[in-house]
Length: 105
Image 1: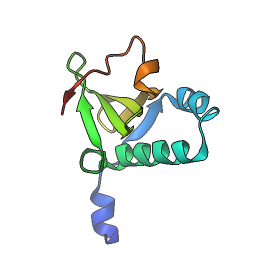
Image 2: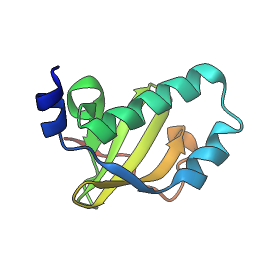
Image 3: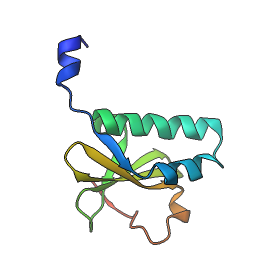
Image 4: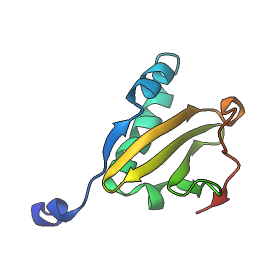
């Protein structure tokens, strides 16, 4: 992609959830961390919707779960234009209290 076109791309900025990510990363192996970081870069550059399976939260507009692999998800929120927040990183089984049984986007 040339410089002009890349400058036109709107990037999202992580505003909330870095501490949540760091806590999860402390117990994850390097491969899992790499996959999750790749998902987060894809969220930031807008490519997540065509690179990963993304599911819309049926009850909370603006919240999405990204399937990193079968047993690993990242749940994000878009609270404002050009901003995103990490709500959850981990397995579906440990996502107690979060609505991760979602409809496909």
